[in-house]
Image 1 (tube, helix red, strand yellow):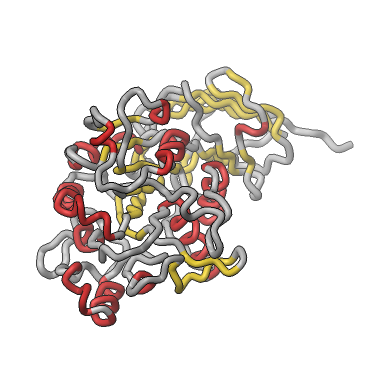
Image 2 (image 1 turned 180 degrees about the vertical axis):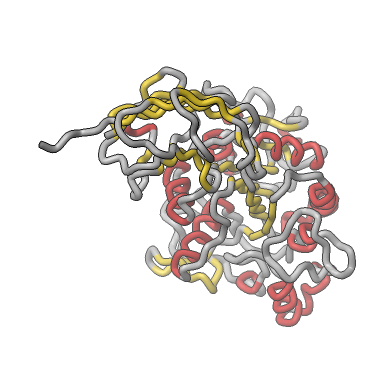
Length: 401
């Protein structure tokens, strides 16, 4: 007669940051687990029969991280150009956790043919916009060189040639000694018409998927940092001919990211953008860094509309941080963002055996609904998005068959 075997997995998770974690020490009962981690994900070995495992980590577990800056390249950024340049110089000089790498892309979205993005043509295709080094691609020296050659009148916006690789470590510099991040963060300041960071990031994922290319490393935590003098476009873009019908939701974008790279250990959205005064409810759930505007005039940094502060729901939902782009210390911002991103927002558990059915998932003693966790297609990997009120330390119990 067939016999169902039920496994009970009890895990104690700590805050996660960004280094390798193979040397952590563990107290285990009822039996010793050898090397319970596999490629940065929690894995119970020898899970045969009905057993309960309790794992306590004595040290913080740290994962590598990929940091993607999504930068507004429009002409209105000229109003704060000096502040942005100096800010990125500070970001480049910051001390980051080991095994961090960075890349830059821009915000102009593609023109749509029906519902299909035209990845070589910008929605507002004024001179040079579609040729920009970061138009739906990661900035690299080849992209900068191509733009400078094709649009010599705008070449002065790119005094630094930048680094050959689109992904680079924070300390990497070009042959002239300029940090790669500073070179990649140069912008053409063109009439893009629309700055839509969320949509351009979505389309970047779509383009990579169509090309069967991977943007991110396996088994890393990912943070996306929007940098703009405004927020993702509103009614001036969405619903128009050739534009997206509406802005993608946080849940749908998060799903796209994990479909693109299922092994990610966490996802956060951060923002260096215009913020409102402290009394505005759009700040609810957002970890604010630095000073907020004190007046309505200070809320608008370059005359651009704020479009309902549309980046902030993504920041809040992912547990990220935001800083007002004007009159703040970018060095302080990135230090806080790096520290904050160390808290894993999506605990990823990998079972050592296939789970044909999940009976129950508990976090800190509270039973989750099936909508609050996801069993991936491999029937072994479980993702649990972090919820408001959870602390840095989580006790997770999974009962499965």
